[in-house]
Length: 80
Image (cartoon, rainbow, N blue to C red; front, side, top):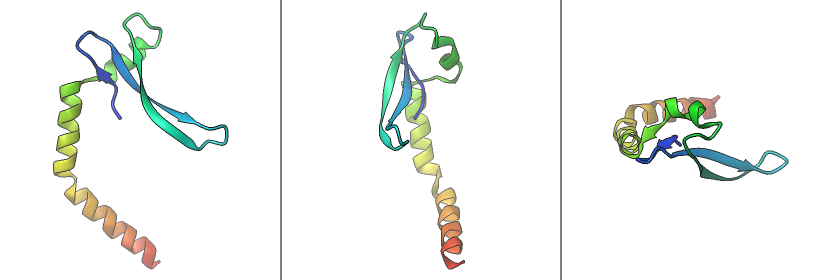
């Protein structure tokens, strides 16, 4: 999940909600407005919606080699 910068400057920051014992309950985005105390922390790593979409598309198109490498690693681990 990426920090998404909207056209009006609002940031959508990914957050995970976990139970007291650490189990994942869910993932969501929290909106952080300019002027919010956490805004400057998240701004440098934020992407526009178009940049995030481009990265996701590129990852889907270019991950074949990585996926083959992972499957080979997994097979070796299962053999051991």
